[in-house]
Length: 381
Image (cartoon, rainbow, N blue to C red; front, side):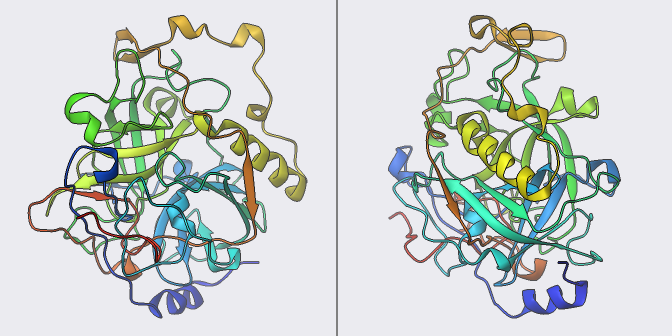
């Protein structure tokens, strides 16, 4: 089933959503406050049909998010995009995700403008990690009612067969999302792109650990941090490896969870790692393939010995320079899965309102265009 543009616009206009704003009070894990709102800052408008794997996610309860098509009827996004909007969107790592709204509340489009799209794909199911703790588990899989035709979009490949420190990956990413262009803007709904964004740190990595100033962003081994440029409404968008993106067969390494911001600038971006949730993603893909009646994606099967890399020699490369960045294994977040028939999304109200900032203070923005966290979310004092 698809829902027409006018119908969706009416649905999105019904609810008034609050912006996400919170202060980072210290560098401890408990003090890492998050919002759920964030667009590609300094990026370019993207209407390239070859990039239609970067999708927009709308919630009939209000709000806009982004996501990645990883199979004909399977979208990967942020978990905070599939919970009910709330007036209190701030979060810390001690927060836990509440129950989702009904899956029928979600709609996905591959078109470059969420509000002007001619058609949307309805969601039928959402799958999330069994662990409801916020940090490291901000990832969700949405199964669509119908397959997206290959002529419309070619799915991206999630990094689940190897680690994100593998030498096949470049150490920089492309970001694409439907969010606002800066914390004070009101221009969500249009897909934008920014390339060659540096990877800053990976918690637990041998050479790229999130230490020092980076420690205030994340110390969860199921996450990684890049430079910013993503803002409200970009929540759930993918971190696409730059090298594979340039070749036209992008690997997606994570989903945008949150990030710090000032009054007028979106700063670092924190992503949930796909390799830390490999089994969750693979199991969801198998279920989606059964429902969609198509062959399993090749990435759902283990790599052959000849195709795997030696973890001890894993490197990341920036241009022609490669550096060893072997990391510890991420915490096992994929050992168990939880299947739900409900879903929701964090968003910016009708793309007409940006993410609020607290003066010049840094706030962790849960990168989704405005409204987001649920009732039990509370501000850090």
